[in-house]
Image (cartoon, rainbow, N blue to C red; front, side, top):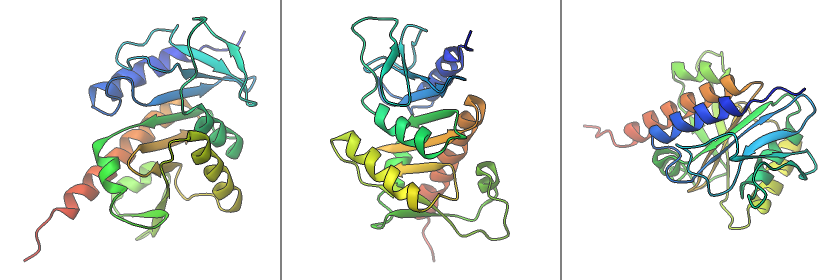
Length: 206
């Protein structure tokens, strides 16, 4: 019998909702089971009130394996989770949230990567270097989400990012990790770094 990780996703979603990072029905979380399939939040569900019936189980080919509510639909961003799981076989959880700070940070550069400040919190993303030079991949926000997913797969096939996270312009972050607990921590760390970046951009220099 596969381990049911929906309780971890429910708790994480409630926390992120309370922080204002999953307002209304925004965002999506998934966790992978030992057989490779993963539970992902169903589309249109309020993230502060999820139950174990508000998820759909998908395999790595994008097919529905289990659907507790017959008329529920997978998250519109399921293709991004598939892109992550297929790009990083070690990933066992993928969390995507929408925050104001993420959108503001995505506007700090016109390029395809956001330079991150060399602050202590980078260690929380696995960066243990003296004065690290690290950037987070930044992708365009297309209305057709599968186009975003395709660009993610193409980019990561050429070069793996230094941090387990990506940013979609004017949209939000996606992190991945080897467990739901680690993905939860990555979201917290990235959002801290983004709050720092937004505050730093507003500092008046005399």
